[in-house]
Length: 307
Ligand code: ATP
Image 1 (spheres, rainbow, N blue to C red):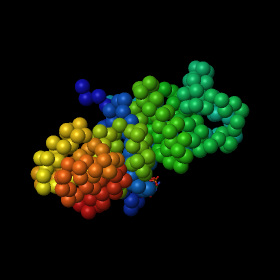
Image 2: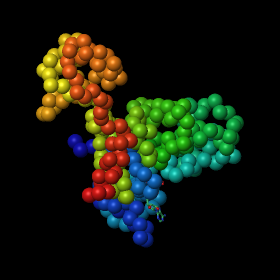
Image 3: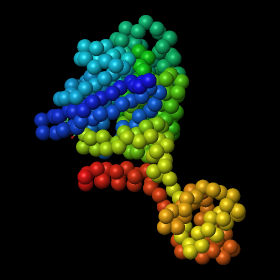
Image 4: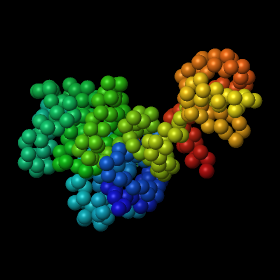
């Protein structure tokens, strides 16, 4: 079955002379965490605002949980939660008071939900402390708690990790993964930094100048950015048998030009050099190769701009 939460077809948004979103066709499947990656002005917020119904498309179609017509879409949007641009927090209130207010506005009777959500985002011990005195990470987590009122099936978060310190980033990653794994919430979150979402998202959607230039799964991305030791020698057979016999590894590829890519021992170059010397294998190249995440992203954007 072709299961999906959201499908867009040729979604386009134009502001006077600016094409903020250009023919975006994507599908989000349930139970996954999607990272929407793009530079400032790439169109991430515009895309999220369109899905959340905060602005309207110039052309194209939004299909949310199978609904496409405007009146049905508004109803389907009750099944999504979002935090776009800034969290909808009243800073003169405590975390609990904020949750109480939003729960009442949304007409949700379950009072226990407030404590439950506070615990879920790790703010259960903040007591009467006003949100204005929260750290950025705490404010972001409160914003997420607010967007979880109503038990959304799709959560849309605009740059939730941006500006957080390393501890805040880890807390946020853990929270997002818990929401996806335990609450079965599909998540779409944006960032201008691919590496920032590397350990969070299961799928990456790369956007530039309003256009999707790549969609890639985490495992495909890992494959693209795999580091390896590039070995050249005029005795490739001997080198390969030495790798197997002495280092007990088969994680290598012999390339058509007879160079060898070793996907193991990338952090043990001395061990490799010493071994080849001991075995009298003449090496003409011993170097670490492979893309870093950032290089992969930069190359991708540059290639798409040169097409
Ligand atoms: P950032 O990370 O800086 O928020 P973004 O990827 O979210 O960037 P958008 O905010 O979606 O990008 O903006 C995409 C383009 O549309 C930009 O060129 C922006 O200037 C333009 N734009 C967005 N909103 C409006 C608006 N209300 N009026 C005019 N232009 C707009």
